[in-house]
Length: 242
Image (cartoon, rainbow, N blue to C red; front, side, top):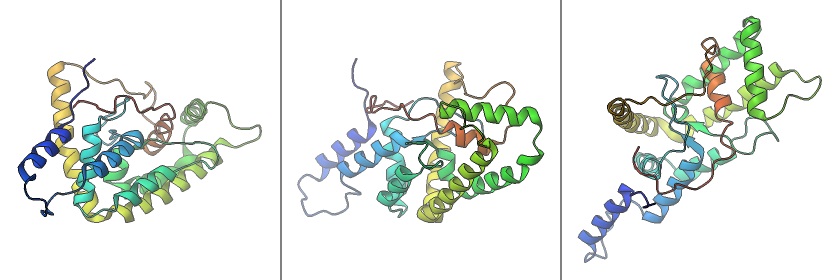
């Protein structure tokens, strides 16, 4: 199979050809090696998911999108190395989950998700029994095993939610207003393209939501769906545009 093209390869190739005779020029935005490294880390951890509008992708993002996210954040003044370190260290359940996928909508509006998580915590005791059972079943499936005997799954989710809220607040600080605005603008344009391509192909991506998941809080769906990233490898790193 022919390796898919990455638009950033072509961009840097053209840039190098144009400025090859100007060795002192410092207008190059960032070394390609840095952008590629950041892109690979984003590709491994971040999912192009946005539950606010119901867009979910089950497969990893392509390398072109991942490098674009890295460039947009770098250009907005975000310390991308610190951001990647935070993403790598995120573990909502201490000692439980080695790696967790982060929905892109967490980066575009982290504080909204903090509020959503905290609201969910307040509402947990009032949720109907069917919804609670569904949340418990989903949590057990994603963790790969039921909670330890005598362990309260609601307490488990509360701990995960508080840990995630702290992570999102730190994410807010690292991204800053410029980073969030720049990333939202990039995602809006990319999302329009993705939706147009889906419509023209008359295909709709399948989501992981069950038929009866309408009442499950969105923050819970985001948090739990992100746990399904443990098997993500580094194949397809070339990744063509979706």
